[in-house]
Length: 304
Image 1 (cartoon, rainbow, N blue to C red):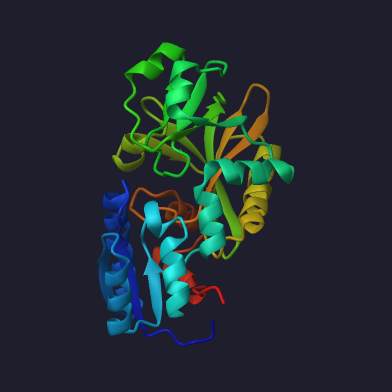
Image 2: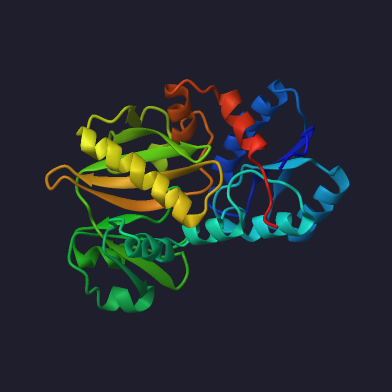
């Protein structure tokens, strides 16, 4: 888009489990956008599409900064509305958002294009609980949620009986990959760095992600050079394969015994909170938070 941006509408809140994270991201982004000299307005999206349409038509922003996480703000629905309104918006478009959000579809796409992923099964929850035919240990997670919401590491099938499943009829079942949790952020479609995420207790779940002091980010990750390069290359390949725009973050598991790297997923709406990984990686390579936001605004677009 060559249009000169003057007024930015920050889209925040949302209708997903990640609403509170979105509000924190939006606060940080709005502050940076104002420091950059843009006129701003904010819209707290609660899932009402007509309210969103009316707000955009009334405010007439030059760009929508999408600070939503999860739900319709990340799965392509909101992106489709903004396409219809022909308003440029940050982050990825409809196709990339919808594919990345569906972990089973994206996992199949990655595997078909030569990217190593854990073995994944797409199961009906009620049937799987009765007959969990998957070798332990394994991981269960919602097929289309974020922030590690609903993720469980299962060491014995009996543990499934204690889980209240609130994520629809289906569940994604995956091999558990022992080792390290790595992540790679991308800006302007290029990888930034490799971070090793070290949680004080358990794995990188919602509490560890968004509670200060519970997680240590080792940047750059202390892994072999060939794994560093593989992670950077695979993250860029996955980003382009899905068709992401400007920013994304790819999450990996690295088995440091077999020295194998597995791509778990691509996030098209990475967090922008003070504890988030993408801004931290940008800062590590010399890009300030304001410059990161500026780049995202400059790369905003809509699908023709």
